[in-house]
Length: 133
Image 1 (cartoon, one colour):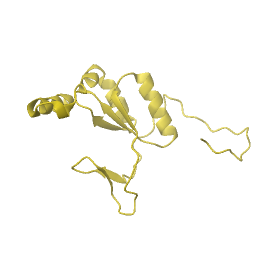
Image 2 (cartoon, rainbow, N blue to C red; image 1 turned 180 degrees about the vertical axis):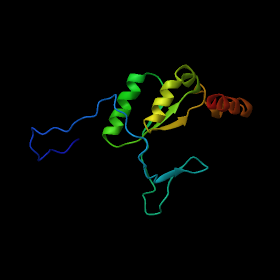
Image 3 (tube, rainbow, N blue to C red; image 1 turned 90 degrees about the vertical axis):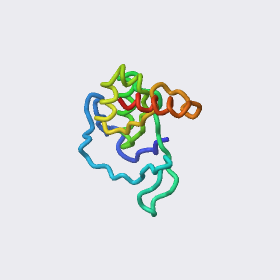
Image 4 (cartoon, one colour; image 1 turned 180 degrees about the horizontal axis):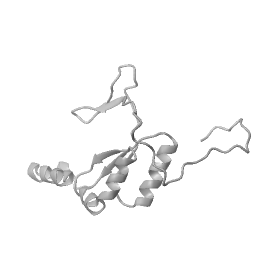
């Protein structure tokens, strides 16, 4: 919940238009990384070992929804991981490009969100390769 403001209530902060793009040229310090076991680990031993990750799964779906989500993330100077399905990217490659150009993180959610743990190895590898194309 936002804290009450002590400033004059007539002052307003200008909100960016949704059509305005946030520059991806700005360098954001990466303070965490994913290790070989897919665990998120701090780059600096002084950083907390636990971290909250904001994720959106099974996209990309609708441009209006993605734009709105990213506008909200930008307003709070936040990043999220957008886990995408290969078949959706094939249908809407421009939405994957939008997510990337707006400076968000893209994650692979396989071709069709099949439970890869239950798939034979060859099928699992095939699904992951399909989603990378």
